[in-house]
Each structure stands twice: as structure tokens, then as C-alpha cells.
Amino acid sequence: MPRAPRCVTGPLAVTVAGALTGGNYSQASIGGIPSGCNDLALNLTVFGSAGAALGTSATSAVAATGTTTVTMIAAYSGVAVLGAALTIGGYGVTTTWTGPPPPATCVVSQANGGGGGWRAPTTQTCSVTSTSVGTVQGSSPSRFATISIVIQNNSSDTIRWQVDANLAQLLNWSTNSITFPGGGGSSCTIVNSAVTLSGSNAGLGSLSSTTVNFDAFESPNASATCHV
Image (cartoon, rainbow, N blue to C red; front, side, top):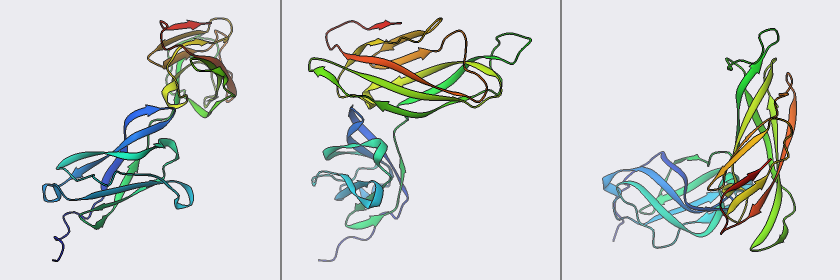
């Protein structure tokens, strides 16, 4: 028996979905599926550098009108994905891949161009150029690791900065406690592994970079604490 005609050519939008643990996602979602594809067999593979397969959908996956979320056979690293290969009803469908948000971002909270003192930012920007996790110390349920975030002042003015980090994308445990020895005027908050760090009162100089280090502790039963 001949197979049904092609129901869609694409491109369809594919992105991460499902539980996030240490940067790994358990699902993926495919958007924009037309009604003609409903209940047809669906196969999705996400791939990284050199075309290496990083995750494949369960064999029972079927398409549904609108957005279909599929469970992957094994969790995959969202930041390592470069693209996705998709078939619906046995036909190849082109895709566009949108990866997860970066684990850390930087914004300018105040700027100082000289003369006028600290003021609200106008065009000043900062960026996170790298995020890394040091060697894990201890064992579950009492582990910690040092997170290092390099931020760059893209402006000709001295700035005060704020960094937001999502520790769920970096660690394999629930983090409710961090220690941030950031110096005078620094501050931090943590809610559900989402961390906000603010730099010292001295600020970050024109077109310069700095490395922000803090220790993140496994504390599944503790209330959120942030030590400066």
C-alpha cells in the first residue's frame, strides 16, 4: 500500500522542552504542524558538531496539530545542539532550531562617564563571554562547585553590572545556597536556582573584562541563602 502524501515541507520550528537537569533536556517541541499531519509517525533527531546525533525521539512519537512535544530516548545537551532532522509520515521535513537561552546574561545597571557621577544606562552594554563549572567538591547530598562567569564591558564608560545565571543549566543538583565574595557593594539573590549577582560599587572600567566567581552548594532541603 502506498504511503499517504506528504503533509508538510517545512520549515518547522524545533526547540528544547521538558525537564532541565544540568543543561540536559528530556524533550523537544516541534511547532507549526498542520492538521494534515495529525497522528502520523514522527521522528526527530537533534545533532551537534560533525553531525553527531545527540538525542532521538521515542519510536512511539506521533504528530499533533499545532505544537508537538516529544520525549527523547535520553536527555541531551541543549547548548550543544546545532540543528534537527525531522520526518513526519516518513517524509523529511526542513527545520529551524532555536537553542536554550544562555546560562548567564549581563545587563548594565548604572554608568559613569565622568563628571556627572553614576546614572541610569543609555547605550552602555555588557555581555557574558564564557561560563564554566569547576571541579565538583564533596558528594551528594552535600556538593558544591565554583562557577566562573567572564563578563565584558562593551562600553567606553565605567559601568556597574548585574548578572543573571540559571544554575539548572550548569549543575545536576538543586542549588539554594551560594557564596559570592564579590567585594564592596556586591549583592546576590537566589530563587529556584536562578541567581542574580550585582558587582561592586567601584564598577568595571571602559572596555575591560572581569571574572565573576561564586560557589554553588547543593541544598535540597534548605531555604534559599546568598552569602556575600
